[in-house]
Amino acid sequence: MFALPSHNIQGEYMKPAEYLISTMGGVRPTARALGRAPSTVSKWRKSRKEGGTGGQIPTMLQPKILKLAAKKKLPITARDLIYGRVRKKSKSKK
Image (cartoon, rainbow, N blue to C red; front, top):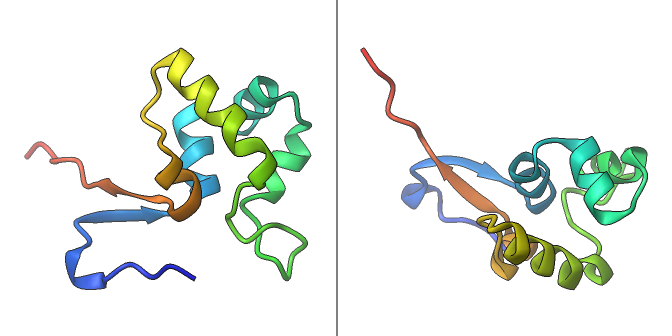
């Protein structure tokens, strides 16, 4: 499995499913866009022990997601769907 070097992380690491769901606006909008039940999409975030995918996105859906992301101009890449992404920390206003 892919491991991120902790000394280079400048933000919050998000597993592929978490990043996709966050970028798409939540479980329900993601499910609607992909033609899946919300319960199916929410299982992607659960651990394998809990009956989920451990944060992975089913391979068969990845091409559809990439086409959808391009159409909607969303910042989702093939790499994001496999490895996840580090969300940069937002600069807080003091």
